[in-house]
Image (tube, rainbow, N blue to C red; front, side, top):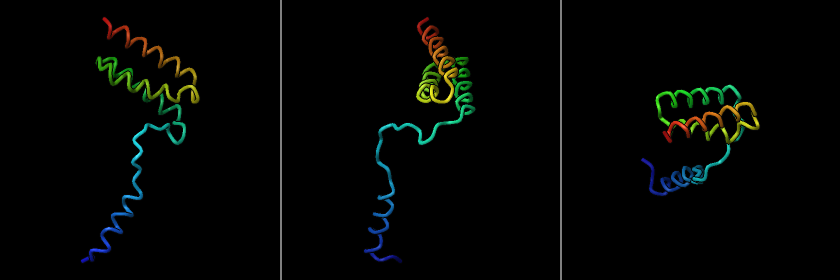
Length: 90
């Protein structure tokens, strides 16, 4: 059994490794164009089932990095966002 002095040291080691920064941060590396295409297709599926909030969230994630990865994807994502706005206003 561990003595009382060891437990705080272990806890301190565990807590030292935690990142308590809750601010959103950009991805450490740019996602591959293929993973963005998958997310774009997922957004289209959300639109099909009329889950506009989930579609909007996926599109916003795409727009954070798509210009650096594939500018054409930015155009597609913005087009989908426009579609969402039209359909959710109706």
